[in-house]
Image (tube, rainbow over all chains, first blue to last red):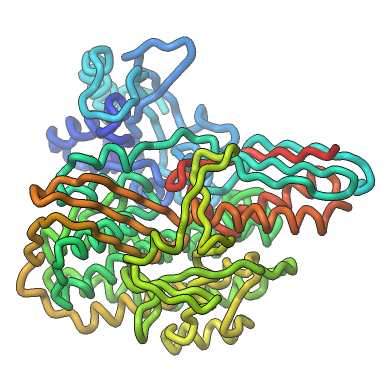
Length: 155
Length: 430
């Protein structure tokens, strides 16, 4: 961390197996008690995301992801610019990071820099515990967040 | 346009809670059918509550909805406490009402500013609205935040609160914890009054509901966290009478059950609440309603945005009243001893009456559970509105008619994730 305030936001539902990877990564960062780093758990609701990252120089969102074809455990790194595109329109339950970022930009409440560290999951059914591939990826995801905090990656 | 067959399809309504579809069929200038297709798979909450302890429904059913978890927790507690003949100490009942105020403020502010207002102001969504009216959307966020703050202080967290238990709470706040909330709520009252004034300037299409109305009723005050039931047609019955009057049935086009009240269509939610209870609003809320042009009743669903804004004023004032008189309860919860019985509970979720019923064994295990959310109850009323609005606007092209039908849906703030889930629109003109 190089002089910027930072917040790590873990998004997800630990009662939906791999959807809990975001909170798991945030918990791990929180236990490190890094100076100048806040840790927030969120369900992804835009107003709470805006409140969480308002004023932060760097916001790192840890979340679960799905992709096609799937590769469970693969870690993706996206910046705010790469999220872009249209907001999710189906419902407020579908409001997510992308919507919150666009809303934040309109309201001038976006973080200085936004990075999303997403881990591809495979099991999003009801229940606790991460699947094998996601459990294995957790350490690398925590390391990726720490690297961002250390300023090792460009924005 | 209205003299030929038309078939319109919208396969994803925006700014509603959940996922579903709408199908309208027009034939020979007449609207043949208007169906709300809730296709989200059933979620089986009632089934997996069976065999669980009587203490678990507040935590389990809170998971049904991220927008109105307190309503689920409260109706569950009301039903189980009724079965077990437990009565809350008054300070605990007050705290439960305070928590409910937080949910109303948060949920209503979300709907007014992020889902409904863009319809009236000609914006595709709240982001576009914020780009041109930053102060307005910022006001909505501040208002929502005040509600969220109540949920965090009293519920332990804003989404799926963890501090609610059958009989009360796990922990009650010290007066000093509520002090900062009062300051935030006093500021929120100005924001809420400003919201009513702003919403009153919207242009509301004409539409008059003909359905019966169902609302909770709480003697001498506006219904929130408990009450008996009343209808516009003059019925009055306790929560235990709900299954005698409200019947659920399956329809082919929805995974959420439809409901009738003594065999007829009815509506629950802000319009019903307001129309049956407006005399119990606080003076400031009544005054704001009158200044906004609302009478003692409101049957235009497009004006529901205005009624919600008035209810936010009431909820903020009510929260301030409860905090102002707060004395910490002598215990965080009353003892609730299980007994073999069936309990019924209602509360006024932001979207309307939410009914829970639990049959409990002497061992404290749940034998059966029934949950009837407001969106399920409102499906038939919504479909009737759609039929009438579509029939009156067949001159519009498909894009215009589709857009108008989506607005009709959003008037009800349907929470399809509660009912099952939501929304895709198909209009067939044949």
